Length: 305
Image 1: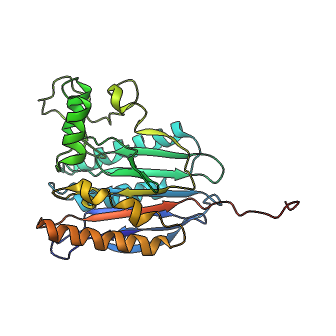
Image 2: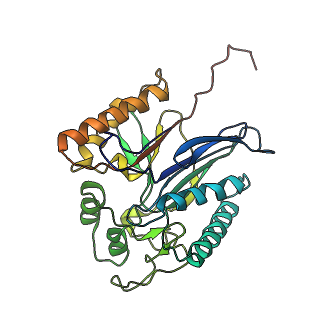
């Protein structure tokens, strides 16, 4: 995991991103006041993990505080192997923080991409905003989430086809989102031009996604494969003039099973800083990345357990 205020050192003055790593023994790492903090969670189930990336809304005041309050709530959320229970708990956290921030006169929020990883069952995913989860193997980079952005809203209304959506979401860059944790959503509106923000989170699923995005539900089970590297990140990782030029480099950079994830993530961020300088895009954004690699099972000698 890495969380950077600025990949080049020339960007933002505050890191509004955050992350949460809870390891298989209940040791939690996250940012508080932009400083990495550790906490031991009592009663955390052995072997269970929780990973999350959050990006405080940079166009709003108190984006960092929104991400911190969301992390605080995630620390209080019980470990689970049930998707409905995870969704219910996160919806309740969103509602509670929405009320707190509204009562304080603050309209802000954050993205949230979360993986709940039990030791003996599929991972559970929960997604709000435009942070992403990718699966990367030796030849492909597959985005496993759908950005909650105006182009997705237009596609849901039948006003963009798959080519137009891909161009606007994955080839161009934009900082505008249509839904955020704590803030609420405009995705459910039948009128694209409405200014009304619904308090409820709007879940994308096969019943409301266009055909070309079916299967990429916001909340679903995921079987993590040992031959893939999974990348969770805020949009600072691809907020480039030509993001696909960088993203196409990921298989060569990250699919190296004999090297540590710490080495690989450092090289990835070094290349990001170089890409930002080459494209002369300043200032650069906050950037938070978590790499996940499922260990392969050790091979036993014949006859051994």
